[in-house]
Length: 327
Image 1 (cartoon, rainbow, N blue to C red):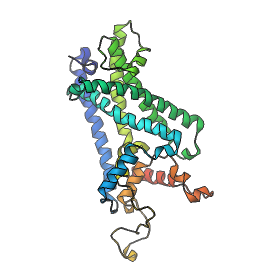
Image 2 (cartoon, rainbow, N blue to C red):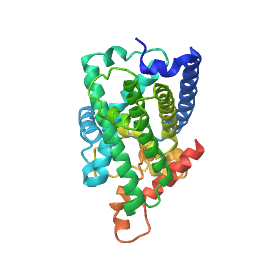
Image 3 (cartoon, rainbow, N blue to C red):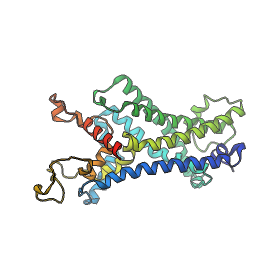
Image 4 (cartoon, one colour):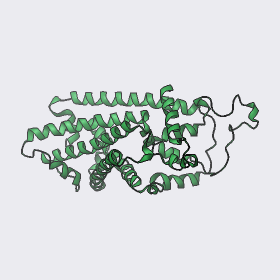
């Protein structure tokens, strides 16, 4: 049986759509690989920092702080929004991969999606589409209207662009699934997001529905790969780097770091401190990549708290921007 995805790609054009799909995927992944390579080049050029010990504790902290998001509710509303979007990514990532592989003609997830587990997943996926769309709208309004002071100095355009792209991904999938059902497809599971999408569709016009099915699919795919390639170019690189960064976090709170790991006599150093990017440790560079520009570090900076013109967030942003320009 031909899936909605295959119909959207091939339709009446035969294999022309399939060829176009492969071109899009190969081009997008090639650009992404080139960008990631430049990010890794700087990371590997960084100085040593011993973080490869206490594996059991690191995995435990990864679960608590990375997946459970234990620290997020310290800033209640922002934390709730972040948790919603984070878990939405975890759940909805499989959906995007399914749409891509179906469109490539290699439906490796089809057996799963047509099983009872797939039916359960489809329902959870649809619920999370509604949750994530709500969280994105909430986040946009919060930035535009509430304007928390700690967001000052952040890349606002990037935030709006990515929140808009995430919302667009949710909406296009709602329309894609909804139009497929109205065209006679059998819904696999309870699909509340698709039902919402159906409210905005011309149910009595098969030709229009067919056009919406195809266009929503292609727009979803293009938005997905645009989003993927924006990640390593923006603050949203943390979507990729956050979990590794949490895993390698500092376990010795309050410990004074040496001027350079592996150097006992500081007079052997050409300079104290840092004169160029490559003199930061690889973990410090990973910290730059992972900064979300949330402003929590500045909020909790003692110097900033007493009115000194010091913003750890803005310093980190400037260093990361410099790194992106250089590499």
